[in-house]
Image 1 (cartoon, helix red, strand yellow):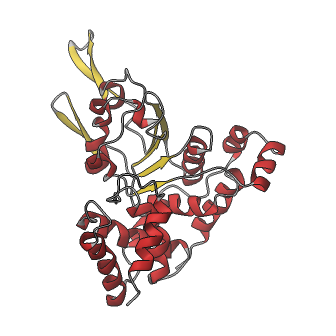
Image 2: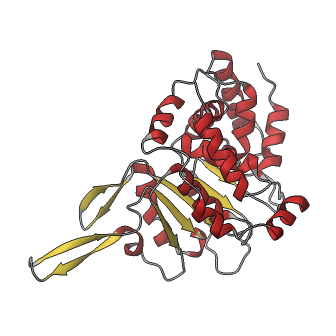
Image 3: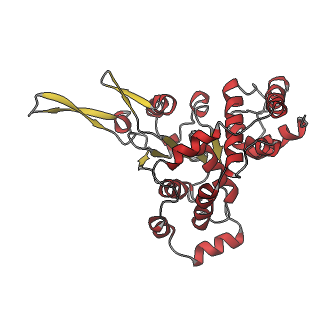
Length: 306
């Protein structure tokens, strides 16, 4: 099972987004698993650039939607306009009719506008003017959001957070990576110069291979043990749902495929656990400000591998 095209995507993305190979691998894994990605961090750390890079390398039709407090659902889905020549209304598709959508600063829009993404993300279709219209395949949403303590933000409700397969945090670059950024080319010029790393249709072929990656009975036991621990432990307000369990298994398979392996090992589950579980698990203590990685690390320590 060859992984060279995917490894090429990771290495080329790493030449633009410096010092963040693990986060890039998680992002590629998320899209490979047909999931939507939420990137939450401070402005200016490369959230938007990573989205542009992935669209270029994966050869996907790309649209960026800048969310603002006055945005309406029609600005995302589209609107019908009266055509005098045909004496009828003609639907003008909105930016959601693309293969990769960057929903930039999604938590700056009102909940009503945020909810306009829900049907598109879940069903890969939208309903407008009483008619259901399919979205192109493949279809991904990469949403970015600023920390909720910043002025002018509307926190995403838990039901919408659950629509994202993974949530990532990029963080500040280390000293060497930041120095390379300061001395190197402009990142926008580098993104423009990137050639596609996958041929048209190749991504969808790779996605179909994800489900063929073998997961043993013992591996399923390990995933169930992790899920059941979150439901029994008093450390969490509520445990992980069956949807989260499926997301964890599917992401683990995609991570293994990215490594060129035909079966999942427990280390694959542990690698994707922070991205899959971090935004779904809420610590029971209100004063807890643990990161996704810290929450996942505690869960991994608490549950032994069968």
